[in-house]
Amino acid sequence: MSPAPDHASMPGRFHPGPVASHAGLLEPVAGGKAVAAGTGMGGHTRRMRIRRRNPCLVEFEDVLVPDLSALLRGRARLDSSISASLLCPVAGRKLPLSADEVGVIASLSADRWHPVADVAESRALPIATIHSMVDRQLVCSDGDDPAATRLREAEARLESIGWHPHAAVYHALSGWQGVSGEEGSRCHAAIAQVERLQRHASSHGRLPSHFHRRDDALDRVRLPPEPFDDDFARVLRNRRTTRHFRKGVPLPLAHFTRLLHGTFGAMGTETLAPGMVAIRRTSPSGGGLHPIEAYPLVMDVEGLQPGFYHYEPATHMLALLESIPSNPARELAATLLIGQTYFAQASALVFHVARIDRHHWKYRRHPKAYKAVLLDSGHLSQTFHLLAAERALGAFYTAAINDVDVSRRLHLDPLREAVIAANGVGVIDHRQNELHLNPEPYAPRPDALAC
Image 1 (tube, rainbow, N blue to C red):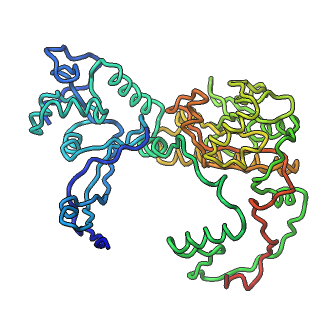
Image 2 (cartoon, one colour):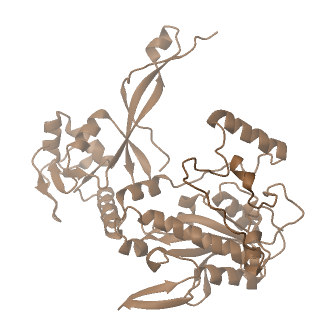
Image 3 (cartoon, rainbow, N blue to C red):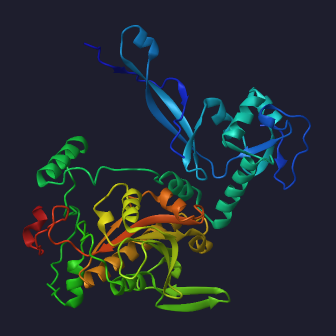
């Protein structure tokens, strides 16, 4: 029998962070380039200058790695190590750092240039180490090679668009590309679902109660009952997430048109100043900016060629961006929705794409701006759901999407246009029900405080 592993209680060696999928004399940053006076490794000039990345967020993590010396002695032991990574909002991935490289970055300014030779001398490091950091984009350089130029331009664009640095990093590193879940292939029988929930609870504890009660309340006031059975109330009650659609039954174009116009169309405009126009939709939006654009992926809508479109509310037209036959369009839908094959049976998806440059024009580097963009998408989703419920159609909303793949497919600028989530719509398949929630009707009752 193998010996049980023992864990080191104190931090051990310093290791570079894992690669995820995707100080010397200071000189002012200026537009001019340094004059070459010889070259170093990789063709870098000895007079090259560098600065800290901007934004520059470094993450430290404790990781467990096998202790090879203990393993050679016949013991299975894990050693605790520190991992460091630069969180890159341009590349959208973690860039591993060594301890020496962390020290170099900590010694640099983001708005002043540092000659490479001076940095290397002050840190007692070979110049090749600094050149390697340039090559891996851990620092910015004033070199004129394409990679260095693209990095400087990308950081300048992040600043000009108005991204808050923390939001930019979060958005870039939370993007999905090529992710495939098992939601579409796993067993959805009731007993299988119960077993999954019980396994989850055994690992993460009991689910917090569905009705929350404050124990420090000073008093409770019973509210009079109010009828909730008019036409609008019935639409609200009928709103639900649909996962069973009638494949092969086209969605009438009139229904699809109503959903697009009713959700993403302009109900009014107001000129606030010359060249500055606010629009009004049926959903609220932070600052009246309405940055969310609709990009439908049509699979089966009457009168529409399957493919990717952009909805243009100014003219109430669909601009065809890519023609895709119906079956490949469904396969693409399943891929973009990380394998949620039941959603790919809908008649159309509508991806929410935020024009960050429009929204952040007003809310520049604002700590709440990115949250407001996500709220905009949520507001639009509820409106989409209600319009679908009004026509007895099935609808859904999901943020579990390969947003990086969507962005590339639509040829979007990832710094200016952010793929947020997707709605879907289609004809409900009433013959199936195992993927739907089936709640019992509920009305408030006095004894509910005990729940």
